[in-house]
Length: 321
Image (tube, rainbow, N blue to C red; front, top):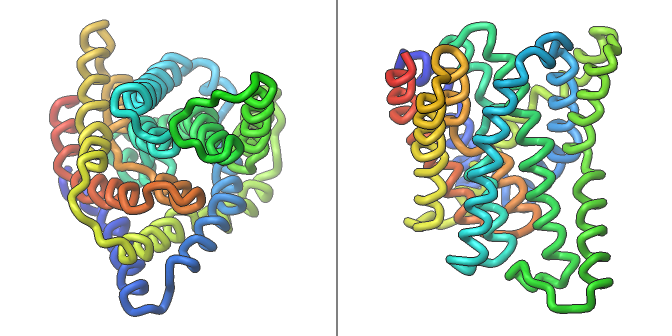
């Protein structure tokens, strides 16, 4: 079982290392990494999300709604809890709080879910990845984009408070919502859900055409993240350590305990816990780079979680057997 996990995660570590090597050798710089990330966020990832979502059979999408509820709850609650604690207890800036909340609620299921989960839970892995991707990309990602956009629109006050006239606040929120919801990475899965629910069958060649560029998401994102990692002098960061511990141990552990308490066991518990125990998504670095928010901290979260999820996943595999 450990060999399966290592086989799935080793390409992630190698690709990050190659990006770091390219940055160290000065073949690529942070500017190039930001351009690569922009391409991923604007083109490759929306295509990958659309191509993956339209392959969900309509009956499965409807009948497996309990799994969708579990994943939605187990991603949204940690996101909201981290955001509120960061803003009103720790008093971090709005962009910093939004990015840490995203680390809590947005695992890398779209990037590493299939190769890691398929050997562990079989054919259901595709459905888990689809559902988790939907909850992340339709709820967590738009919410993060709204918060980051709102901070820019409101003048970067950074604390999430706006003391100006109500009309100004309303205009800022409206602009932020429009800006985030019109992002291709948000629109593409929403459109795909509509296609599945109304039972429109698109030709297979459409999905294949989208997958050509969409399949580059993981490699390009991780390579660009490696360049960014090399450019940052990574030191120990308490927020990064907290985000990593929450991502790998606290959230899947609490999910396991909660599902056991209410009597949900078997495949549903196993699928949910393993999916939620994956590392932070490369999107963490993509957005922090694009919005220039705590890039070093978010790069550290990506590195820590990708390395440390090997032993933590082994723990949850053992617990859910």
